Length: 131
Image (cartoon, rainbow, N blue to C red; front, side, top):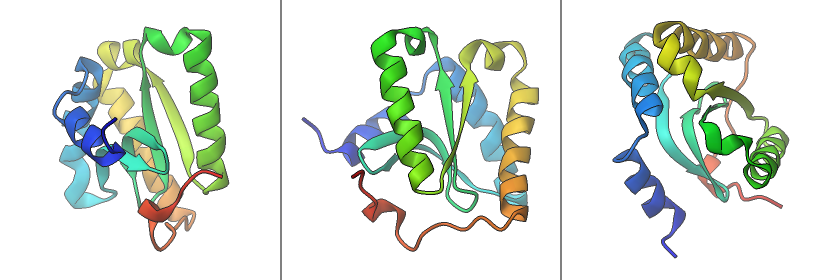
């Protein structure tokens, strides 16, 4: 099995169409505010998008996320991230296809609101591992 960082690197080169649509929009906003990373490895998980400063994980949910096993995995990830002070925003892929600019604006605003609320990242996010 590949180490999670190598897997994340490969996933960055193979974004799904809705992930690519969202990435093309949130990366454009980086100079003016929160910076997002794509396919970010943290603990045992790889997040679709992550804003370190706002401690905001963004997950794009395709149809596979409706399967019971995947839903359980998603819930475990959300719960673990919450214990680390990380909020998770889940976005249905169909919403990105239908309203990509509105979705990107919502992601951006949520990150800005979390920054205004004084959310700050731990010293070393990469050293966090699930219990």
